[in-house]
Image (cartoon, rainbow over all chains, first blue to last red):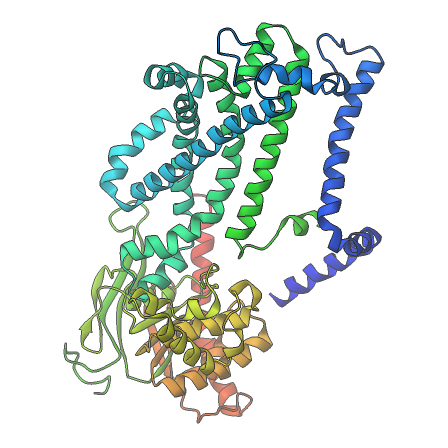
Amino acid sequence: MAVVTRDGEASAAAGASRPAAATRLLASMAGLDWLAKVWWTCLSISLFAGLWELCWAMGWADEKLLPPPHIFLDNIAEQGRFFNTATRWQVGTSMTEGPSAFESVLITGAATTMRVFVGLVLASVLAIAVGVLVRYYRFFDRLVLPTITLLSPVSPIAWLPVAIFLFGIGNAPAIFMVVVALFFHMVLATINQIDTVNTNLINVARTMGASKPQIYARVIVPAILPGMLQVLRMNLFGAWMVVLVAESTGVGYGMGQVIMLARNTFNPSLVFFTIAVIGVLGFTFDWLLRLAQRRILYWLPDTAERLRVL
Amino acid sequence: MSSESAPTFSSRDAVVCRGVGKTWAAGTKRAHEALRDIDLDIKPGEFVVFLGPSGCGKSTLLYLIAGLEDATDGQIWSFSDKVETPSPERSLIFQETSLFPWLTVWQNVSFGLAIRGASQEERRKVAAEALQRVGLIAAMDKRPDELSGGMRQRVAVARALAMRPKVLLMDEPFAALDVQTRARMQDFLLDVWRDSGASVLFVTHHIDEAVALADRVVVFTSRPGRIKTIYPIDLPRPRNLFSREAEAMRIQLTELLRDEVDRAFAEQEAFAAPA
């Protein structure tokens, strides 16, 4: 074993000599970590936008079909009119009344974000509860798991009519869609997480006289948390996709409804503007979740850097 | 009292095994006999090492004594109680780190008390005592991932001690440590053992470790695990491991193990060969 360790160190040392300069540069920016991250994020987005603009400048991208960022971001007030949710459903009020364009975008964005958030929380709580119950009671496992597995591959689109039948229009059907789209996978993911809990940890608790409920509450649930937050993060994007579908098809207002409006009025600028807003919202949501993850899962080491320097 | 006396339910021995056998996946195609006909008596305060080739079932026996697995045949008693479930009186320490990563060191050590609903002050007090005994009182509020491998195993020992066990079961606890740390940990373990008065059952495949630690070495045959012989190490403590007697014992134990390792290899080759 000692030999293996020494080999590992030797190869690590050999690898370290080449990117030493880069490492030193990074180390000098240690305090400015977040600034570097912002910089790279901006660079990444600018590169993408720049390529698009290049295509437009070369005449490869028709601005009526694929308007580049400088066009669709040019007149936010003009775009924002279509987000004017406070007045748009009322007869006799004009498009220019009510909240300002900027406020309208905020209101619509907040409404969609709220649906994603509530749906995600409901789906996770339900899925973790059901997943734990499946492993806790054999009876429950046999009774419930086949149905969950059966419904798992059903596309959320198929649930859309059900959402409208049951909840009409408004927040409820959109939230229902998010929950139903995530719940079944998350149950299966929870069960998988429970099955991979280190048996030593469970055995330690058993030798100390822990009962079954205590083992679940004090060992299994904390042990699956890291994996579950990872599952949650993956499903966050799923939630954003589903909520748009729900909103676009007769489920009231929201980002999805704006996209649908843009489609019906052949307004590519509005489509790309909405996509940009959704992107920013989703990105921020993910960032907040990662912050929370680091807070809640304080005991997990950061492995990304170690994998990169191999 | 002595292990030679007739096996009875009222025996005061720390651990008594009678005709213990274990078959994994019994009754299926993959059935695999791990242990057969184990008769063993371990006295209170005795240090016994289980020595055998990898996969000979010595760890399985430890799990059976801990009550984490049920024996297929035979019966196990501990201090005249029949072993049927795990008990805080028989603490098990694992080869790999088995500390709860989300708890601090002192919370890990007092986990068993938390299970019983002890108050925070009491838990901290007991944890402090146990950590004092393993020399890690300063690490009380640290998290396991901040500790080295050796420190983590000392915390695991403290956690076991906090339960005031009568039998300490150790499944190759120092296997993942480097040679120098392991030597220190052996000295540390002997101190803990002397202080606690508990019986220690220690699984290893290191002959050096067996000679350094044991009152008696139980040598196992390869699959299915049976007791080949029980070898007493009657060297005075503290032991001089470089003495002629210690060397002679290591050579004898090596001889005893060699046949079993050869047999295990032959079996593995036969298993791997095309049918």
